[in-house]
Length: 132
Image 1: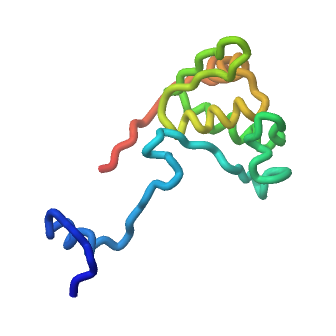
Image 2 (image 1 turned 45 degrees about the vertical axis):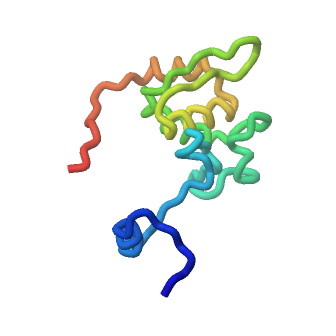
């Protein structure tokens, strides 16, 4: 039965019909290269509204900031460049790591304090990820 679908290759339709899950990107994570921490739970919900923790105008709770600091210790591939003229720092690196570093900076931690955190807790051993 026809349903008004135009396809170039029928094998693509067959492959799509065999899929059990289809993942789409409606947030811009893949297409725009952006990702952000929306909320953080530390032994229960973070204090205040879920986005208060990552808001540039509101500091994070001590538990939330401690959890972010622990996560950011593993983000050693992120490059933090100071912003010009009071602008926020520029971040480069893996999208997941950059989103965690950005959340920590937005929680009230300065770029200087972040660099000190990384200096105080250097990586001493790392096991590379392997899918096998």
